[in-house]
Image (cartoon, rainbow, N blue to C red; front, side, top):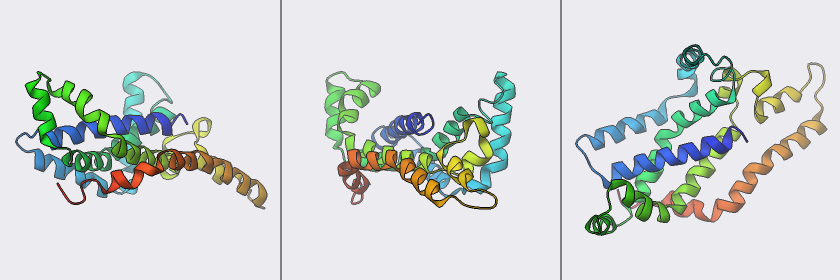
Length: 210
């Protein structure tokens, strides 16, 4: 929970702000920047393992907080948030394109600036897109194994790594593994139950426009 909850919320916030700027506040080079964001979706985890470890080790040395960024949950959260920015930006950008520009123009007439328009006009109608991003990122972080294995240590292993370690060297306690797997799946099931009705609506937003 220390990984999936803050990581999902941070990804949602960054993706929402990026999508808002790229869809409603056009600037020179916006399309190029959006394309570069999308390229990040196609970088495999294995391709960033070594530079990611070097970056987090450097952050440990820079801050003097050994075992926090590399070897701890905060570093794993940072990796997932950064890696999730492209898909989160894409979802929010496609959703915000479907929101009429007249709403933003009306808020400008009333004196609202960029941030006020986002907070008072855009964010209140962002429920479906938020649901999609929360489900996507929460599930991705909760089920992560590769990043968790090489970025964290035994004292901060998340659920998936602990599940893998239940298996013994000589025998596999299948009853324990199945019970642990069911318990580990409960949070993601609850997320789908609570937010699932918004999922398809938010996922399909922007499919015909933008």
